[in-house]
Amino acid sequence: MVDSNVRTIAQNLYALQEKRVAVYRKLERSHEVYLHSGPANGFPTFRQAVHEATEAFQKISHDVLSLREEARDTWPLLAVHMEQLQAAESEKLHLTVELQLAKQHLQNFPDEEKEDEVRRLKHRINTTIEKIGNIMEDFKYDSEDIR
Image 1 (spheres, one colour):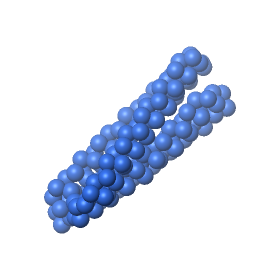
Image 2 (cartoon, rainbow, N blue to C red):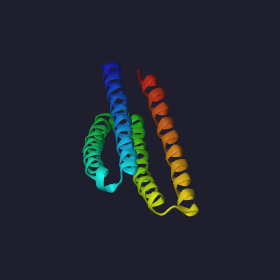
Image 3 (cartoon, rainbow, N blue to C red):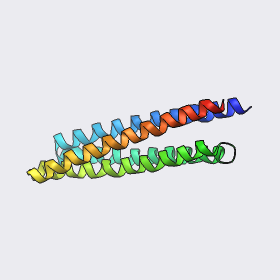
C-alpha cells in the first residue's frame, strides 16, 4: 500500500512537471512570435496564450498542492519538497514575466542597460531551473527511499 501510494504521488508529480515545461515552451514560443510580428499583429494571439498559460499553471499548482496534502501526514519530507517546488516555480514564473517585459522594452527602446537586464534575468531563470531540478532530484531519491 505504501509503495503504490508513494509511486502514484511521484508519477503524478512528474507528470505535472512535464505539463509545466510544455506550458512554458508554448508561452515562450508565443512571446517570440509576438516580438517578431509586432503588437498590432501578435498581441491578440499572445494575450490568448497568456490566458491559457495562466489557467494551466493554476490547475497544475492546485494539483501539486493536492498531492502535497496527500503526502503531508505520512511522508512530510515529500510534502516539504513539493512546497519548495511550488515556491521555486512561482519564482520562475515571476522572472519569466519580468524577462518578457524586458525583452519587449529592449525591442522598442534598445540600450545597453536593458540588454544587461535581459542577460541577468536569463541567468536568474537558469539558476531557478537548476533549483527546481535539484528539488525534483531530492524528491526522487527520498520517494525511492520510502518505497
